[in-house]
Each structure stands twice: as C-alpha cells, then as structure tokens.
Image (cartoon, rainbow, N blue to C red; front, side, top):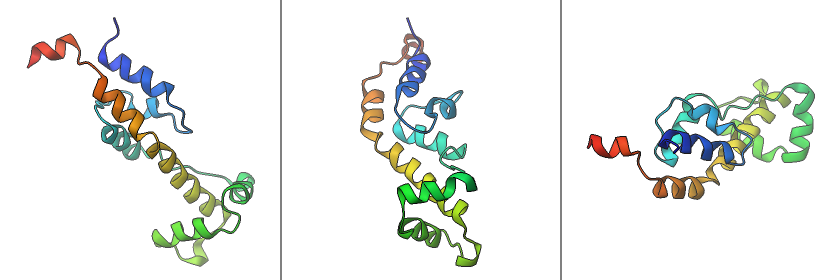
Length: 125
C-alpha cells in the first residue's frame, strides 16, 4: 500500500503543467493547494527565464501588442530603459505559469480533501 507521501507525489506528477510541480514539492510537507503553491514559489519555480532566441517568438505568440508584458513590468517597478525582449518574455512566461497553476486549484484542493491520512499519522494523534 502506498504511503500518503507517495500518493501525493504520484498525484502531483500527473498534473498537466509546464512546471514540474512534483519536483518542487519533493521533500516538502504539502497538505493543501496553498502548501504546494508556497513550495513552488519559495523554490522560484514560477520564475521562467526565456533567452533571446526564443523571446521574440514567445512574445509574438503570447502578447504581440506587448500590452500585457509591459503592464507586468510596470507593476513590478521596471523602467522602460531596463526592458528588453528577454525580460518581457520572462515576466510574461512567469505570470502565465502562475495562472496555469492557479487553474489547477480546484483539482488539487479536491485531491487533498479526499486523501486519507496514513495509518501511522492516525495513531500519533
């Protein structure tokens, strides 16, 4: 029989995301959506870096007007003189990764709500 931790890791590996959610939660005690989000955030898992060769393509496919990426940069305090395609693409990809993960909130919450505690954990109380 699988342990609770093994069930959690198996579930996280099965989630469809650009982020390796299971990797960022390995060796972490996660018991909720918020725990998973925090584990990824604290490990900089949402920080996507896009290099120049892909930056223009990413922006053309995801924000060809640059409106969204410039808005993100502005919210984060960037000055126009410090922006380039790599920065804009990376900021946008990071925001998209957070949004993609947020879309999994119900699925993750439902999983943890239905997950039974390990027998060992039950006897410790």
